[in-house]
Amino acid sequence: MAKGKFYVVWKGIQPGIYTSWAECEAQVKGFPGARFKSFPTKAEAEEAFQSKPGSRTATKKTTGTKTKKESVISEDKIIWESISVDVGSRGNPGIVEYKGVDTKTGEILFSHGEIHIGTNNMGEFLAIVHALAYLYEQNDSTTPVYSDSKTAIKWVKDRKANSSLERSIKTEEMWLLIDRAEKWLRENRYSNPILKWETKHWGEIKADYGRK
Image (cartoon, rainbow, N blue to C red; front, side):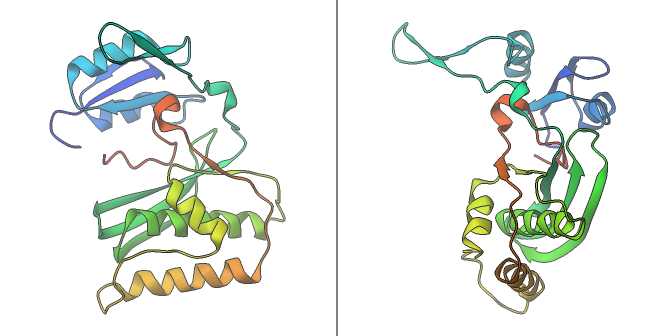
């Protein structure tokens, strides 16, 4: 956890503001419909906790004393019967790992250990394809997959990871996995929706590693 980070739990075992990921995780892990998010300062966390996102329309400051309304994407838009994927990394580029979880329960459905060396978006790309392959093997063509990476979602839909990471001896492990994922996308067809997780409105994605 980065120094000075504060975690707001709107929905969990005990809603409140926590100063470590471990404390926050204890309140939200396995809690259906948990809502939480990290903030860099205590003041921002306190303001966010009091605002109760999703219960009303948020406002955003503009010039002078005017305000501009910003639509809130309410939690009832979440498809809970789904898979959520996310990446844990150390550096970008850096060591990357990923996992997929049941969005409703938080149960880990699959995971991949540390890969040397890749980017966050490459890891997200692999995680989404892994989720699609996982559902394909179960003959499940309707369950959606959530990711918080617009870039990775686009890459999957294009069936190509358009990363600028140089291919070298150090990055070969990641690129070989990318090659395999792209091959799977070329050879298989899926109809599972790939959806963007709205972190701003819903809190961290359920597969989050808590390293932000």
